[in-house]
Image (tube, rainbow, N blue to C red; front, side):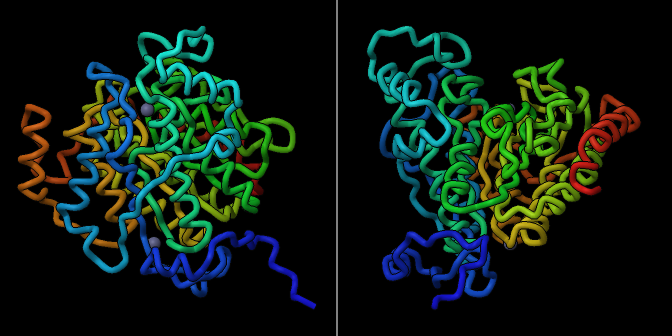
Amino acid sequence: MAAPMPAEAPEIQVNDVLMAASFPGWSGGIAGEDEGMSERVELVWIGDEGPAYDHGPTHPLRPARYVLTRALIADYGLLDGPRVVEVAGRTASDAELALVHRPRYIDAVRRAGHGEAGAWWEFGFGPGDNPIFAGMHEAAARVAGASLVAAEAVWTGRAEHAFNPAGGLHHAMAERASGFCVYDDPAVAIAWLLDHGAERVAYVDVDVHHGDGPQALFYDDPRVLTISLHQDGRTLFPGTGAVGELGGGDALGTKVNVALPPFTGDDGWRAAFDEIVPPLVEAFAPQVLVTQLGCDSHHLDPLANLLLTTAAYRHAAQALHELAHRAAGGRWLATGGGGYQWARVVPRAWTTYFAEMAGIEVADELPVAWRVRASREAGHDIATTLSEPAVPAGVDLATVHAVVSDVKGHVFSFHGL
Ligand SMILES: [Zn+2]
Ligand SMILES: [Zn+2]
């Protein structure tokens, strides 16, 4: 008689021989068993073939944010070591997208992007935030597919950590485009993990905007803990993310919102992160940590009003990395997200996160070749270092602390804290 599988072991649906041929670091193994787990770290690259996820030249969400991020990661030599591997993304199937999106919405996205006429505004499309663009379904399905490759990597044990810088489109809803987001790739990845046997997934969203998509799509699902640190929705899109949004039914207490006042700086943000994120994730004991690493919380970002510097990202990177190992068996799936200083800020922010994932300390001074390329594309000078001078906060720590206390009061007791 076969020994029963441990409850948390997923079905293995990959062929070890094929995996070994395709992935040099692959040594087999089952997620949930640390032994045999690869220490490999993957950068999942969406690729340059097929239509770009691009709403047009005047739209603030620029593909350059992840193109320049990949270039900076490469120029720092982070892809050269034996542990770090760049892998190709893929296209998410309709069935995979339908894990969170309605079929009629997927159909509408495809037809609108193929130039068909229709009442597309009913699905959130139109001039402004979510203009229709050619090949919209194909492009958005590739963003989601890259997050699925990252999910497969960490769930099968092919890699410990995986990062899709093109992902993090966290505002898309079941049948509505919103906030520049067509398909909700973090939610698709989480749903895929659940579908493949995960019982608990923690999602931490540090984008300056509320992570409303994953929260709404798993609002009543106790298997998914979502924690969003964002600028207070009374002052910023999408308006949600109040402390009282706690999840429904059995899921009460698994949806956590830290709504920070405008002009919160590094110190307040770090204090809020440290007091809320590690204790809750640890208490939840997820099998996978999924993070959305939007860096539109930076003081130079044109779309929001937090005042962070790259010091906050370095802190979050270290804390999330430690947490992934301490609380989630090392399985860490990271996506990009918002970030509208696509040359000045985003590449430095996400390279900071990826270097931490790879366990490589990089020089503070940015590679010259990268600076030349980035300033040429941006048409202005680029900072010379990853680090940058401190910026004074515009709100006192006591105000931030009141928000943190309110969150603790609403949520911690559900988790025995
Ligand atoms: Zn954002
Ligand atoms: Zn690690």
